[in-house]
Length: 253
Image (cartoon, rainbow, N blue to C red; front, side, top):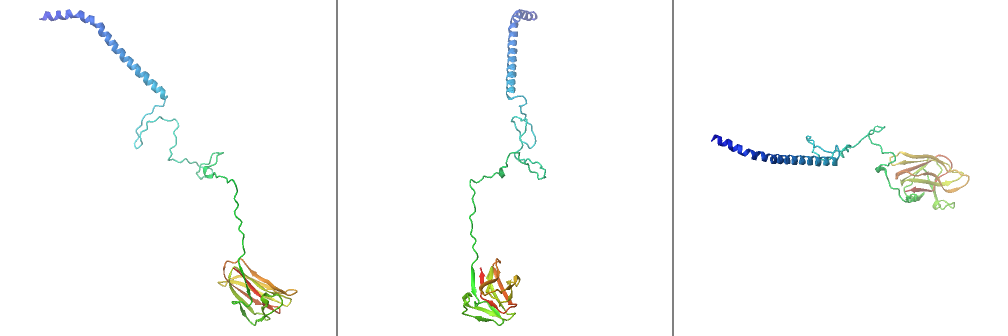
């Protein structure tokens, strides 16, 4: 009935009014709890922010082709290990000069505790062969004669000699030099002597004299040394005086 519903709500109104404080108290407790939770979250977030320091929070930035880094940002970026730092010096070479007072690693060298001297090698002269005037290979051109069993100190006591200007002798040898040995005397004259190589090119040419105030056996009147090892030929031609002799030839190996 219509009047019955109104009475029912009227009878329940005191109960609702009595329950209102409890409802408000519950809502207040819920709101207080929410505020406490919010304050706790704010405090924890502030402490975490303060622990890392201002400006230390990193943010991931998406760049195409570059991996995302989440580490702390540094105020001074370090150079990439794949890049080479270069500076142009005064000479334009593009090389970074070393810092003053520091020695580049490449130029550091350990000093030996004791100096080591190279061994001394004794230089020995090349071997020499002494050939008599009648040795095979010596060619005489002109009117030469042989004087044997001489008591004057000649090599093997014999010599080849001539008294005619223009007479000559020659000898081809292999080595680095040669000595022409003869006698000296007041009656002995001059000769033109020269040495040529295997191609016929002159190596040395000289006019020699066998004159002396007394007889002197086994005298070197012509010498050539220090040639590159090879084949050479000596020529000698009488140019003056009474006698022209050949006593020996010394070939240097």
